[in-house]
Image 1 (tube, helix red, strand yellow):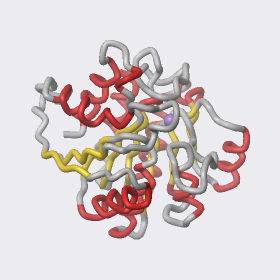
Image 2: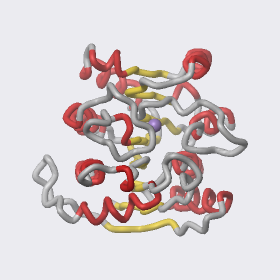
Image 3: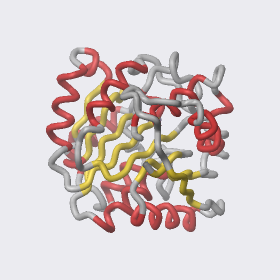
Image 4: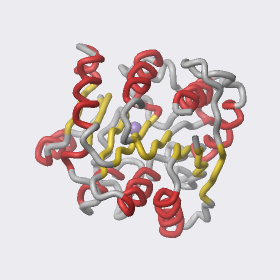
Length: 256
Ligand SMILES: [Mn+2]
């Protein structure tokens, strides 16, 4: 497995200041993962994207890397997903996304992609077809966002739906996602309940338990078309007892 460190600077201006420290902290903790849940010793190589604190340059650097290298992109802000998927699109015609996130991320914030609207930009710019997007675990959104998801035909599974049958949702997600030529998995740590992942910018009660999330991704990772993964929005400065960083390292282990 290749792990690509992306130390984004974005987030420094908003409430998620500190998330740029996550890649180093998670990799430090990753050394303590001796075996994953399949009793496999994680094997990995570290790569990185050099960040220059210039939004345009940084976005094209991530895009470039994603067009060349397959692996797990370790952020950082959720903004990086925009550039990763754009890079993937250079190699594959039909790209799909499964996004594990408490938020739909289709609420326009600025005139450039950010952590709250990266998906909106991907769809509006025609990089990803709306019907190739699957959202899992959403539970905090503007009414306009749900209207947008419905209008565009984006598949979404709220936390409430997940509670009624986790494996049924997982079956539907996998059935849809296996049809894409190339699949990107986006893992926003805030999909997990803040009681288990407090180190993040937006705390949204009522999320997945760690066990439920692991079960879900252990099934999803069996899909043969996954080309890239991102793990984002961990904020070590907001963490409690390093719990969220440890959880992120454990998740990383499951992909090796
Ligand atoms: Mn989120």
